[in-house]
Image 1 (cartoon, rainbow, N blue to C red):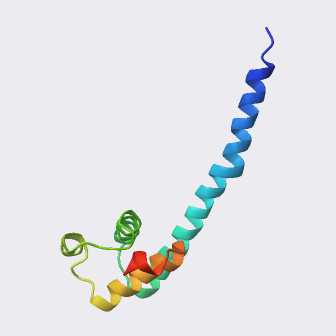
Image 2: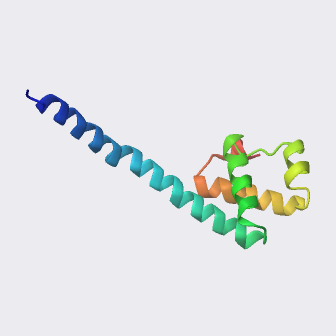
Length: 100
């Protein structure tokens, strides 16, 4: 039984994964580390809080609802919040209009 077509298809899948998906994942991780460091320079909070903040910002195009802020980040000043949102924007190269 000739498995050449299956082997060629598998090869193409592996190449696509390496050239596209790994590149995207590595880019995300580099941006994440850069953003996390920038937020750590703004305020000293636990990593899990920084992770949550970044996740919420990325999910909602940089906005943080009043409910999310009061339930998770009520200790932040307005200045800290603006600076942290700017760090996410800069870290992920998001346009200004998404992070108003």
